[in-house]
Image 1 (tube, rainbow, N blue to C red):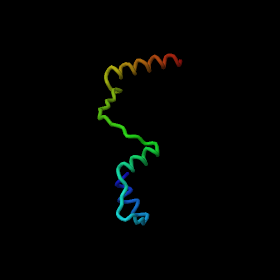
Image 2: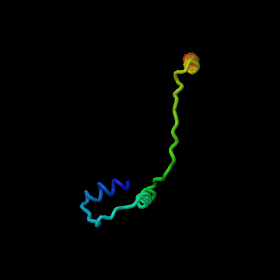
Image 3: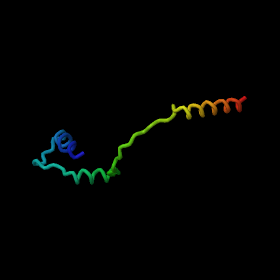
Image 4: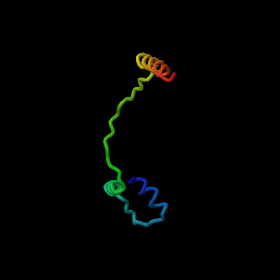
Length: 71
């Protein structure tokens, strides 16, 4: 946000701030007022197991039993 404000928004508004720029702290304070919060993102790996043999077998059995109940 700090870079965007300093390099894009202020110049596009034609504001002459005498070379002053907002600090990282100011940008963080603005984001906090807007409801954003700093969070640590942990990298992880998601594995979708819906095609595993045991899951496919269970799904097939479930659907067969389910279709028998509809009759």
